[in-house]
Amino acid sequence: MTDISDRQQLSYIAAQAADARVNLELETEGMTLNIGPQHPATHGTLRIVAKLDGEQVIAADPVMGYMHRGYEKLTEVRTYPQVTTLINRIDWLGSFANEVPFILAAEQLMEVEAPPRAQSIRTILFEMSRIANVVLFLGDMAVQVGAVTPVFFAFRDREHILNQIEAVTGGRFHPNFDRIGGLKDDLPAGWISETKQVMKKMRAFCDEIETLVLGNEIFQARTRGIGVIPADIGLQYGLSGANIRASGVDWDVRRDNPCGLAYDQVDWKVWTHPDGDSFSRFWVRLQETREATKIVDQLLDTIPAGPVMAKVPRIIKVPAGEAYVETENPLGVMGYYVVSKGDLVPYRVKIRSASFNNMSISPWLLKGVYVPDIITILASLYFILGDIDR
Amino acid sequence: MSSTDTPTDTDTPETDTLETDTVREAMLEQLTGEFGDALVGSHLEPGIDLTIRVTAAAWADTAAFLKTGMGFAYFNFVSAIDWMPSPFGRDMDSQVDISIEGTEPKAAEEMTWGLAGGETRFQVLARVNDIVNHRAVTIKADVPEDSLTVPTWVGSYAGANWHEREAWEMFGINFAGHPGLRHIYLPGEFEGNPMRKDYPLLARRVKPWPGIVDVEAMPGDDEEDEIDGAEAAAGDATASADPADGGSQP
Image (cartoon, rainbow over all chains, first blue to last red; front, top):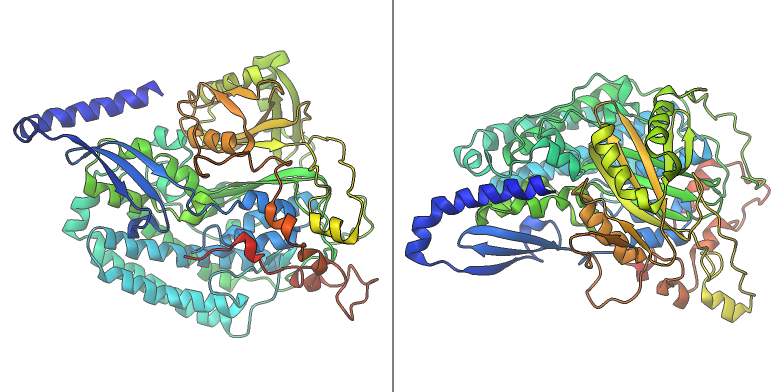
């Protein structure tokens, strides 16, 4: 703890010294700036109370809970199949991915395994949720530095993905499609070839964003070297997903522990970036979106035949026990610690959501930055409020 | 699982459960060697997970040792569990059912604990990862009933700050040495600790539980035929979210 505040103090003092002459002339005094709860950069209702000295942040305190829905309590009065309806709404941009770790935890307790076909389709839909989710980030990040056009491209192309998800699940945002033991339904006819076309479009979108945003001088000036997270600090705060991989940590649950999903059957790569700044977080997510389209493409070719549902009882009682399963969700690692007492309902579900940990670094990260950078740093951390507040 | 509706599990896979899990056994050995009597319980599920239980006094030392001594640099989460069964009977019984239909409220069940055992009503629960060697461990500790206080983890893992604020707010567990235990989700004047089992879920108390209907037999359904339908198992049981609980959408 001490070494963190020392480091921050040093950077703060250094910046103070640089500004000393200006401050002497202008006699700045501290003020408190309220950002949010309603601000486009906050993806929901997050409020940040920032104490400023001139243009510099002395202390930032995120205030959340505006969207707290108490899902951990509500899971205790719902049967296992009903819980997926709730947890769909945690990260609402990649809903399907929320269901998977909970279902896997319940399956682990019941000692049921989904048939290979269901695992393969699960992985496909999981990666499509990732694309649908991260595509919006790629557009939105550009908005936060002042370029409005890319977000329209993002919404335009996300529609293709949502259409495909809707064709399978019937729901655009909240599919509620995953079941203990498999999936609700099989794929509709003609879906595979259509999805391949969509994946081509998504790769074209990534190229488009790359040419539009990544090489842009203003974008680079606003993100390079801004909001740097050293790897050891990121690990302490439990950062995950692209946020930690952009700090040079080569860790991806999909590769390292692909329990119940078909990632080990695919040839793919984990992208990392050594810099740890806002730019590298954007860069890693861009590469991951491309990689996801490749994973989907490969899996579409190799979906095994067979049923999509294992044999499970009609009334699902999960045997007593405890299980923790985590997966690499679009926003980072998401896990469910499920405690069962052999009932129809879970006894306790601890939801470990990615954005909660990812945001917990913000008081540390925002200390000493300048006001316009607050927005780009928050955007580059990429959180969904439902994933923080649960 | 004692119920009769267990499927004849032809599909249960040959899991890669190892008879001996050398990695986790070595972890357990190292932890036992370090903490001795302070490690009061453990549960090793070969090929799946390791859970240990330490005394409340050793709670912070465990974090420090795992981080610096064993390479568990990644902080995953801190939370808590309330092991006291709900005094409102089984969780799915609404109070209205009891008052309207006159059913007897069920007597509270005995307190039982999960993996690695337990002695007190509240347990703190945490998990850390070693992302280099792909290991993870779940740590539990009994929270003393009189003080409800355990030492904080913030000294070892700075990220525990928010998690401990949440556990303090939801369960009323104090973390000694925490830099600022204040509300994180709930408004400042909120009273009570909502995640405790004896904190009533008001939506359930004022409105009969609709979901119970979904797991009973549907009209025209053959009741004997329980193992039959994979899709029936899940398809019908997804009740619409209770409006009182407020689903949300940006």
